[in-house]
Length: 178
Length: 192
Image 1 (cartoon, each protein chain N blue to C red):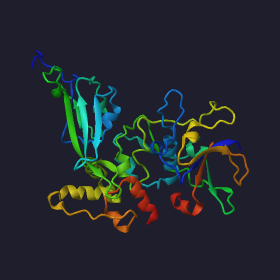
Image 2: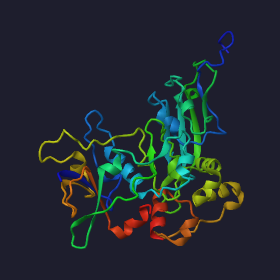
Image 3: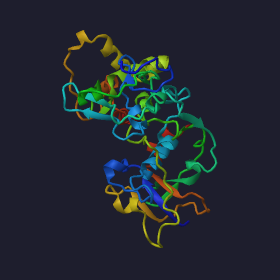
């Protein structure tokens, strides 16, 4: 370290993702006041579809908004690291990648898989109101054994769609029509 | 009754899909119409769960239940449906005032947890705007006979701005008319 002496504990340095608890919801991207510092891109055509959350230290103003508004409270936090100098520009850009969950009916983006599992855990017993969350969690638990091919369902809403991970619009259709 | 904004709920789509623009002066990117749609969904389509998953899912407590809000959307809204003879009929708003979900625009971070948690698909991401917008119905900014920008740019024909004559001729204060697709389909949405 080139900084002499100790850095204060409350020093607002570079923000760091906590890869364990960050769920990739994108709240930090929304609340970031420095335009271009935190950004998000969804790649729906990749296999599997992914979301990238990109953090650029050269634009970051260390305001701490992302930390204060983080959905999981610890997903991103300001560290004590205060040395902004890098030799390679690439080191100034941090990318965090998440697997996306698409609607099994219409293919629309629902959120990241981690977000669904986080919600399952947060809601507790209330998660049983929502089959999408239960299935997302069980898919996570049986990741290896899960290579069962998805049965394609037609365009019309069927009773079997109750046991699929659905986007809000398909869920609404399902509840009105059946 | 005066000129009102008429929203046909059966045809209605979010702002990005129907090409609706907003003429809010300082912020042309304002999504005023989406903010109206959000309020309408909370007031009419929301099932008002006793223990609401959306409220529990919100990490910042931005959602809450409001009862009898004076001047809120339910007060401003007139519900009509097309009756048997093609005339517009007023739909009573009984039981419409209790336990409506309200989203705080300051606390919300747009993370979308409520949209995933809602068991009925009432809330969806494109409807929950971050940052939030407001609709002032272009009051005081319209020339006589002029229609708001959202009505002229709407591609799906769900919006209109004209005089309304409902069967019930009593004077009403509402400034938004929500056209709903027949009482029969609608009844399940209202809390009995």
